Amino acid sequence: MTVTRPAPATDATAPGVGAPRRDAREHHLSGGYRVLASTVLGIVVLAALGALMGPQWDPVPLTDPLVVSSRDTAIGSAPALPTYDVRTRVVTVQLDGATVRAQVNEPVGAPPGPGVVFLHGAGTGSYTEAFVEQARALATAGVVTLVPDKRLDTYSARYRDYVGMARDYQRSVELVRSLPTVDPDRVGVYAESEGAWIAPVMAAADERLAFVVLVSAPVVPPREQAAFAADSYLRNTGVPHGVFRAIPRAVGMAIPGGGFEYVDFDVTSYQRRMSQPVLMVYGTGDASMPIVQGAEQVIRDTAIAGNGAVTVRYYAGATHGIKVDEQIVPAFLRDMTGWVVGLPATAHAEPKIAGDQPEQQYLAMPVPEPRWLHNGDVVALITIAAIAGIVLAGMVGGVARGVRTLTVRRTGVPAPAGAPRFAGGVVRWATALGVGAVATVVALVWYIFAIARLALEYEHNAWVVQGGWVAVRLLGIAVVGAAVLLSRAVVRARTRGVPAAPGAVRVVVLGLLLVCSSVLLVVLAYWGVYQLGI
Image (cartoon, one colour):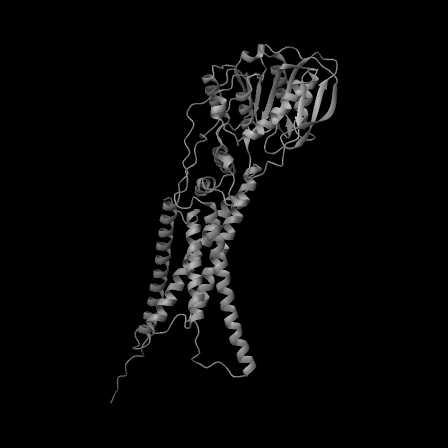
C-alpha cells in the first residue's frame, strides 16, 4: 500500500511560519512609512509656522539707473594744482566735556586758502591712521587740513548721537577758521561712510560752511543700509535663497540689550537744508552702499534747498575706501583736490555725473518689522532658556540615574526587576531630540557667522555657503524625525499600559525636555531652517 505524504511546506506556505514573517515585514515597512509621513508633516507645519511668524525678504529692483555722461572723472574748470611743502603739527581740540588731539597739515608758503576738516567713518578713529593720503594731497595743493581723533567716550556700538557728533566736529571747523593760513569763508568738510550722516547736520546748522565732500555715503538710515549691505554681501557670496529670510528678522528687530536708537536716524531733513556745493564719490566695487540711490537722493534733497551744485564721481572697481588692490585711486585724489581748490568755479563744473557706470540691483528701503518676535531680548532669552532647560533635564536625569546606581553598589542589592524606569525607546529618542535641537541651533549660529565673514571679505566658499546650509537643514530634519520616534515610543508604552516616564522626577525631566526642544524647533523654523518656499 502506497502512502502519499504531503510535500514539505516552504517558507512562503508553511502555516505559522511564512505568515508571521510576512506580517512582521509588512508591519515594519508600514511603521517606517508612518515615521516618514509624520516627519514630513512636522516639517510642513514648522515651515508654515516659520512663514507666519515673521516678514519675508523681497527687495524692490532699482529701475531708474543713474547714467554717467562721461567716463572721464576729471573735474571741469579745475585749475592746475600747485605743489607746496607740508608742515605737520598736532593740536588739541576742546569739546564739550572732553578734548581730542588733531593733526594739522599746512602748506608752507601758500596764501590763506581753503581748509578741510575730516569726519571719520565707523572704521576709523585716529589721525595717525585715517585720511593720511587725502589730507596730504590737499595740503600739497595749498589746502589746510585738520584730522581730529574720533571722540570715543560718547561713541559705542550701542550708542551714537550724530547730532551731538556734528557739534563736536564743529569745534574743529571753528579751530581751522581761526588759523592765519586759512580763509575762514572757504572751510568745508570731508565725510566718509558714517561721517556722511554727520556732515549734512553740520551743513544745515552752519550756512557759512563752504562745501561738503561725501565719500561712500550711505544716505539712507543705518538700518536700511545694514539690510542693503547684508543683501548685497549675501548675493555676492552665493548663499541659498532661504538664507535671505534672516535679513528682516535680524535687522528689523529691536536689537538685544537695548540702545541702537541711531539705526533709525534719517538724514533727509538735513540734506534738504544743505545749500553748499557737494562732491559725492563712490567706488563701483562697493557692494555695501546704495551707490546709485544715494546720489539720486542727495541730488533730489539738495534741490529742495535750491541747490543744484552736486557733482558725482564713480571710480571703476573701487571699494568702500575708494581703493583698488588696497591702494587709494590716484584719480580720486586728483579730482577731489581739484574740486576743492577750484571752488566756487568747480561747483557747477561739467560733467556733473562721470566715471564708471554704476550698477545697483535693488533699492535700499525700510526693513519689515517682525510681527511676533520684534524684541531681540525676547528672542535671545527664549533661545538661551530653552537650551538651559534641555541641559538641566539631562543633568537631573543623569543625577537620578547615578543615585540609583550608587545605591545599588552600596547596598549590594540589585534593583528589583519591576523597578520604575523609562519605557523602551524613550531615553534614546528623548536624548536625540534634545541634543539634536541644541546642535542645530549651534550649527545655525556658526553658519550665520561663517557666511557673514565670507560676505564681509568678498569671499566664495561653496562648501560653507551651500554645504553648510544643507547640513544645518539636514540636522533640523533629523531632530523632527527624533521627535516623531519619541512620540511613537510614548504612544506604544501607553497602549501596553506602561507609563512612559514613571515617577515625578522622570515626568519632570521628560516634560522639560519636550517643552524646551519644541521651543527650539519653533526658533529654528523662525530663522528658516524648515522653509519650503512658503
